[in-house]
Image (tube, rainbow, N blue to C red; front, side, top):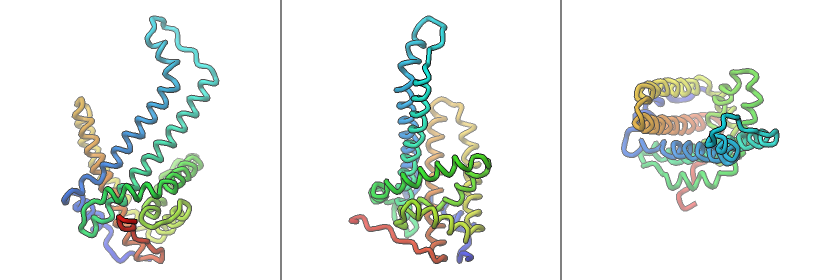
Length: 256
């Protein structure tokens, strides 16, 4: 079914909307989630490998540390768990941003408190959704382009969970269906993300070599990029679900 809107104009409007009022703060939860996820992963890794590496690093001996097969297996297990935990944290932060971005399209302010509560209430479904994605990505790695296709097909999945009250499996099926019925509009959305990401990469590359300044610039640009993605996904999700026979349940009021 053709969408009754102009996707290029909507993608452009999402970028304009980002710089109105406090909307530029929308990407903050995702940035914080990425930092927390990275810290948890690094902490878990150091907790396992630290007792083996640190003594060798602080000693005068040039002999490499002895790592047993059990330690190798433990390191791999912790590495996998760290990836899973970091993915769930990032999924929670992204869902928080999506729910917070929804009132912006009604000329409201970002609802960070309601978005947080909504993401918390859907944490189990978000975690299940993220784990299913990881499994599908691993299975599709053999095709090289498989993970990219999955990412496109599931682009509306988190929105279906936090804005449409779907379960993880329902969100996957509904996102597949919505993308397949609105492939042209979704490709415009994906291309908009690519163009904005390329534009965001340039200042990060130029200023990334400056100590501290590069880090701050990168975090700021990542926040703006994530805020734009959330705004655009929420807009396209809302318009496409209205145009299709897939109903979109409203986000509950703050008292819910």
